[in-house]
Image (tube, rainbow, N blue to C red):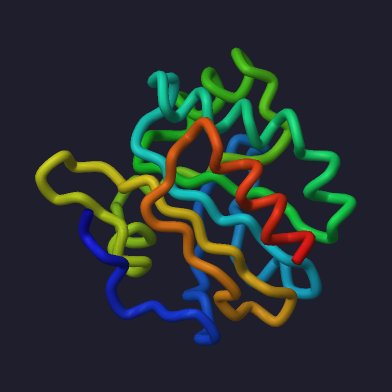
Length: 151
């Protein structure tokens, strides 16, 4: 697995702007004061990404009760995100990284496959990286994130 480059625990998470499934442009800085589960995934409606997204859906209220929000990001477009989100009733926004700049800045873009690798950043309420999950196993990852939020 390729290691996440440039970003380290304790350092600021890069801010970004991206269109989302809720029709708004999201900035990471919009979440200041809350923790953020910022998860990058390869492609909408694929087996692993569906398992991971539905896993976050199933514990979403627990994540929010722990003072965090979930934001998924891939290089798919907003229409693809909307279909994926509606099909699986995902209650959190998915952001479209069409120009790959966010994935590149976070060091998770896979040039060979032209998509983001599956990596999650837990961002603290001050906008700093609290934990990096890399690699991620989709079936157990949401529970790992919940455990980290509880710690």
